[in-house]
Length: 96
Image (cartoon, rainbow, N blue to C red; front, top):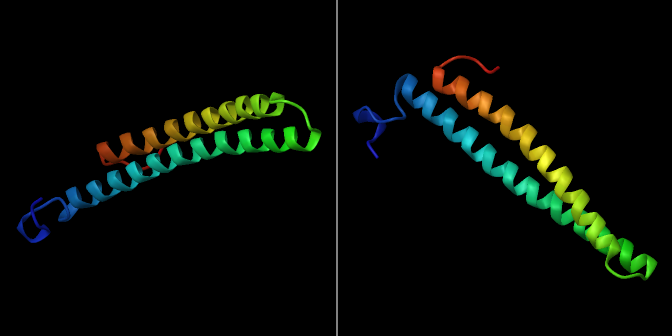
């Protein structure tokens, strides 16, 4: 990587855009972690219901499916929003 004092990506408008794109990338990674957490939370809640009711794995199955649905919904919403921000950053415009 070229240092900023030699015209690297941290200098001027290009540097600001690179920092913004990196920030959006980290937020995208955070959405992935959030999605996996939501799936795990659904499964754990289902396990707790199974333990409380003393039955088989029905709660785990239902909780896992609900967790997947919730996780995928938030993943898609967040990804669309961040993709718009990323496109705006690439064009040098404002958020959409």
